[in-house]
Structures are given as structure tokens and as C-alpha cells.
Image (cartoon, rainbow, N blue to C red; front, side):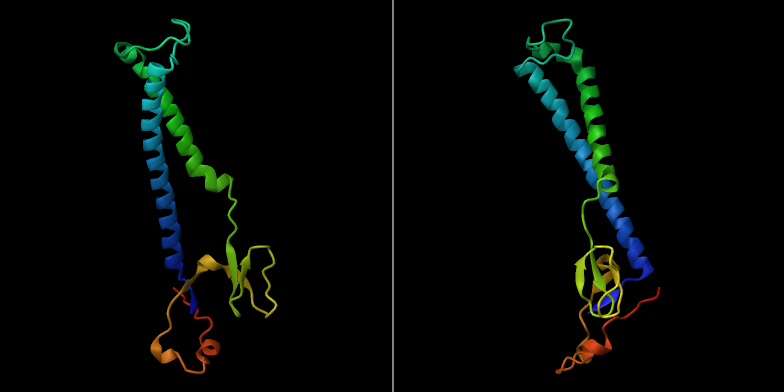
Length: 159
């Protein structure tokens, strides 16, 4: 049966979502830094993309013994792009929220996508489905004729 979450559960969900978003951002930053740093070195050696093209022609290959000369540039390039990707990843849900959250009626439990119409035909109101949780009913609440549904549709937790 669907029951409303307590305030504490809603706060925990919010905190878990924020910490998960932060950890994903850190992982993306670390991996993107490594890939961009090594990719920049690899491209310099194989294709000839030099950081300072005014010293040598832009398509001359960087020799392996010249890599320490350009180390700071490789480092700064990778750090810049990693930080840019991390900022995008972290703030993407804030600025580009494209996900529609489902809403559910508190009386008949009909669910639909959020369309700003919060009144249900049954007389109930729609609330975010993330404000509810599903719990299995206890055996003593289940009757063979399923009349327990009418008795225990919404259990409101105050907490």
C-alpha cells in the first residue's frame, strides 16, 4: 500500500540525492582529467598537436623526450576541461531539468505525469510520487474480499 513518507525520510532522500550527485561529479572529474591528460599527450606524440605552435610548426610531432617541456600545458588543459565538465555535470539538473516527475492522487492513487492540474476527478489532490513509498500490507490487514484497500488507502505519517 502507498503511504506518505515522513519529513525525516524526505530529508534523507534529498541528502542522498545530493551526495550521489556530488560523488558522480567527482568521478567524472577524475576520469575526464585522466583521459584528457593522457589523450593530449598521445595526440601530441602521434598526430602532432603541439601546445605552442609558434615555436614549431603545428603538425610537427612531439618527441617523447620533449613531453616534460609541455607538461604544464597538458596539466592545465586537462584541469580546465575536467573542471568545466564537473561544473556542467553538477549544475545540469538545476538549469536543464528535463525530467518530468509523476504525481499520484492521495485518494484513488491514480498516477500521471505532472501537468500542473493538481485536482483529481475523484476529489483528491495530486502529490509527487516521491512523497510516497510502497510498503507491503501486514497479513492481518489483508482480507479475502480485498476490503482492506478501502480502509487503508492512505496512511498519513506525521513525523
